[in-house]
Image 1 (cartoon, one colour):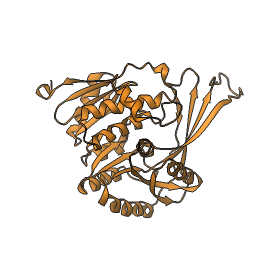
Image 2 (cartoon, rainbow, N blue to C red; image 1 turned 30 degrees about the vertical axis):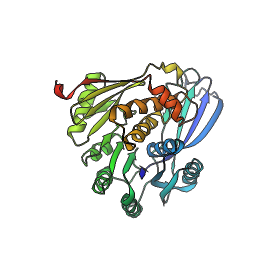
Image 3 (cartoon, one colour; image 1 turned 135 degrees about the vertical axis):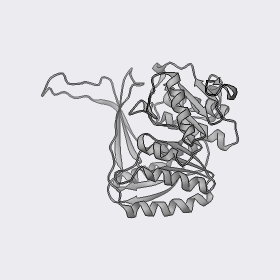
Image 4 (spheres, helix red, strand yellow; image 1 turned 180 degrees about the vertical axis):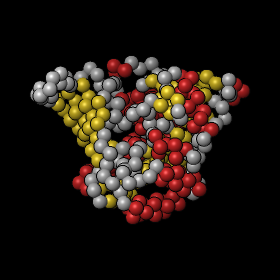
Length: 327
């Protein structure tokens, strides 16, 4: 069984506009009208669950939800065929806003809320339920930020509990949450670098810098690190010393909605790995899935046949082999 955990899910509100106006003078007033809008359940683990369900893979979405917006998240997931097992808390699940300007959809404007605080007793209730679910888990995806009141060290506990139960863990997070989770030895790490293009003390400005950051991640305990290099490419570093570059010939101008595309990339990798495919094939399929989703106005999109077809255009090149590790 695949379990996804999103400790800080969201309602994603997306607005498409013809022209995003920005004030040039104090007290200047104007109105930007949206040509359309959409509302989705959101959060990294949530997006992974939606994609997996869409391609026919059973999974269970877990985490914390609250208030009216929490009901929106759960209802959307269930409507999409995802089994849910969330813990309800006081407060309100956050709302994240994205603005997509016509002709610049590949440069979205993100505004994310922090979420409402969580009490120790609510965290304990989640941990009890999580521990029970791990009895049936083969893969666990831990994704996204933590709500206020949750210490980053909880990520270490979640990874450790899952690995001790015999599940492989995929971790997608940033900052202190990522740093804590890596210590517990997840199988695969996909850092969230949207807010800061820095990782393990390294500015991610070149392929060499990204490769070094990946090496530090696997040295800290992960088996595989996959780090964004460009919008249409990533670098993968393994504990065996291999370094892979994954690329696709897709111009950014084709992108209509990047929301969740990185999570679809991760979900595609998981789909192939869970089915026993080698890492190279999983990386190729994952990037194809993520890019196809970005080319659709739907937040999470993809059809297996379309993805397999697009995967033929993705190149996965080993730029450092085991015999060259460290060079």
